[in-house]
Image (cartoon, rainbow, N blue to C red; front, side):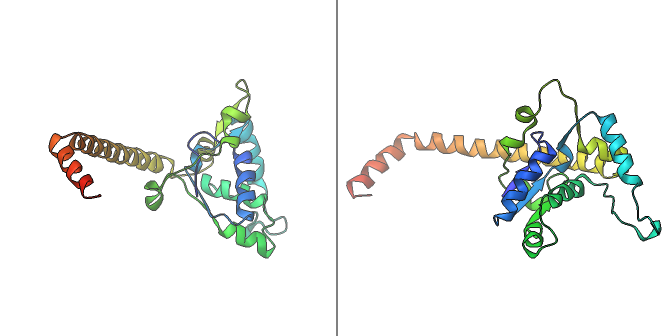
Length: 195
């Protein structure tokens, strides 16, 4: 099942619903993670992110940890991980069933995508509340692939539009062909033979 973050989902709501689905055995792919929304203004979220980025291994900072991801897909993955018992075998198996991507990569651009109505910003956030987009926040803190993802998304949308137009044209031609009088006569003959 491919969950699409295009419609402006709230990241926490989306993560909790997905965590529940993963624990019940569902395989889930989240695409367009850069379009996920976070409640609170961009300025406030930048302050929170800055505070998080300052956290490091206290006795030896060179050793790393906690790992600060910069890509929106990894941040969404981390949010979902926080809602799973990921240190137990069950939680580890659930987390292995999740894939997160920025943009819509090749195999998933040709599959049907689904939105999560319970996690949509329009449903869950009052219209006067401030929010920001995860992609914008990550771009401020060193995510370098934002422009590339945007360019690839435009190219994907053009290809998708061309495919849709070809499909509609084919359907129209087929409908017109079914209305031809020769075809009606042929159908009547076949019906007489029991087809």
